[in-house]
Amino acid sequence: MKNILVTGGLGYIGSHTVIALQQAGFNVYIIDDLSNSQLEVWEKITAITGVQPIYYNIDLKDYNAVSVFFQSHKIDGIIHFAAYKAVGESVAKPLMYYRNNLLGLMNVLEAMEENQLDNFIFSSSCTVYGQADTMPINEMTPLKRPESPYGNTKKVGEEIIEDFIKITDKNAISLRYFNPVGSESKGLLGDLQIIPNNLMPYILQTAVGIRESLGVFGNDYETRDGTAVRDYIDVNDLADAHVKAIQRLLDGKNKSKLEFFNLGSGTGSTVLEIVTAFEQANNLKINYEIKPRRAGDIVQAYADYSFAKSELDWEPKTPLQISMQTAWKFQQQLDKVIE
Ligand code: UDP
Image (cartoon, rainbow, N blue to C red):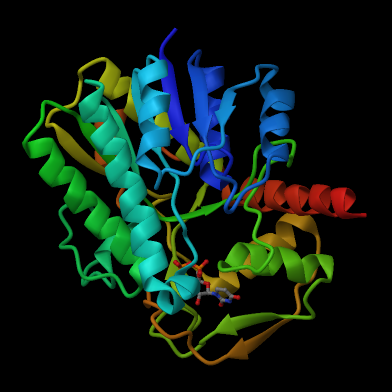
């Protein structure tokens, strides 16, 4: 059995990936400092798969702690999610974001080198493309400076990995996600955002009555209905892509030492289309009001995932309707816990 370390494994995409790894027969170690996750997620993973992953609360900024972990475990591959991800907060606290996201990354890479480990998957984002000039976005689309320090930690993170890979014999894959949505089928795990950053948690909190209405940021964009276009991809599909990516490295099937893959549904949806999809999937009504454009927002971004399809044998499988239903299930589970 291969041992995979998942940093940030109690977070949204991380926890779904842990489940997918366990179901594919991997032995999973989780490192998570609980800065944006909860210990209960560990129990929920165990309840879903019947297997308890080994968990350590380690701050990746602490090199000694990272080094001790790697010295005492035999790790075959690393999937590195652990990072702060709130765009707005990153604008207000750029140094906190650069320190956490880049120092954590560098410490893991350093420990890989120190312990002669290989096979690194990086959790990146389509934010590295900024507002691309052409749609859909493929891996050859030129990168632009991201609008936020958060986004820039992903772009600089990729550059750090690239420079590191050049001088070592290591192999890495950077996965650039579009907008993750949905939850595992029981709704036990999801995108827990107490103060939301993203569209989906805002919709969920409006549906459940925590918020009176959803603010739709701008309806004067040059799009079908004037609202901005994104590519919403189910989190379970993203999790599967991580399993395929780590397997590719373990099997030595990668064609270069550092590969990049876009992971999206391939379909652009406007904000209002997502609101309608949520309403129809769950038979609910969402109050919304049109607000001014949000600073830093791009008009549109959607993926060409054909490279992931041909090389990783990956394609999105979950219809948007199902993602909308599992997301709502997750929100309802949360309320049960809070009551
Ligand atoms: N959005 C919105 N209302 C909200 C949150 C987001 O209209 O309360 C819009 C946002 O302007 C963008 C889209 O929904 O056009 C997706 O936003 P999100 O923050 O989820 O992702 P990102 O902008 O990072 O792709």
